[in-house]
Amino acid sequence: MAPHGYEPKKLIESVWAGTKAMVVNDGSCTNDKVFWRTFASIYGKDSLKDYDVFEEFYRVEFQQAKMFCSYNPQAAEIVYAAKKAGYRVALATNPLFPAIATESRIRWAGLEPDDFEWYTTYENISYCKPNLSYYLEVARHLGVAPEECLMVGNDVGEDMVARETGMEVFLLTDCLLNREDKDISDYPQGGFSHLSDFLGI
Image (cartoon, rainbow, N blue to C red):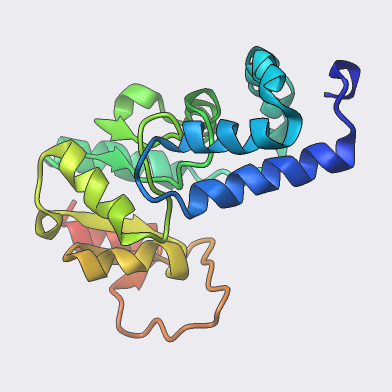
């Protein structure tokens, strides 16, 4: 972004400020609006004209991040198996990224966006993890009660809180994230093979 007049350190700090604003979003507007409102408060409203430049970053440079991401073919396999077994499948990923980035990440996992009934992006939802309202909004969008949902995730702090909404949870211990070293003994858990058994697929 330097050729467009952005000093690196300030830009990074500004992106983090926008990210933090999304995390505490109160639901009054979508996350993208919160991010860009925060960004414009730092750089001025004229900076909004560079929206397309940021989108171009996700189309081009961001794609190089794929080489640093782990890949496990079992992730795609279990999505396909769950759908074949009749489960409705949505991707409840923390909506800090625009759709173009989330769709790229889906493809890096060996899937296509159309493999999911819905996936959260910063354009289509008004909360972030671990806010319980995020999970309630996902359920509302799918037209189901939280009690009808199973949240599968690898992040103890951000994913397992879904249980507090009435959702069932399964802690995927492959690539486990437990930043606060919480007791995880109470959660159904395991790797992809254990998840397959848990789902009966």
